[in-house]
Length: 82
Image: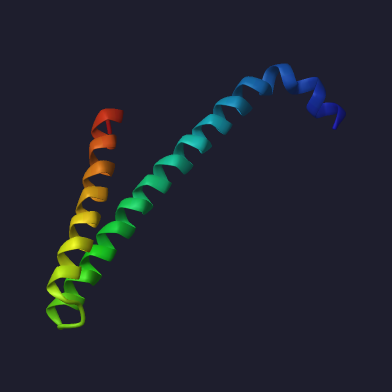
């Protein structure tokens, strides 16, 4: 503990940069996961429709919602420069 306090001026900046990098990585993984989840939901919906488990009207409504959500994530990534 005392050693940690004595070395804080030296290790502090490195620890801060590491923490920031971890937070950025967590955010990027969360966005990737959100996009993957939406794409999987869309695929599941399409399969259910093809098998006759979902009516056409319900399929069209949910498909449009999923496509808009996917497009919003992709647009946000383009704006963020990814």
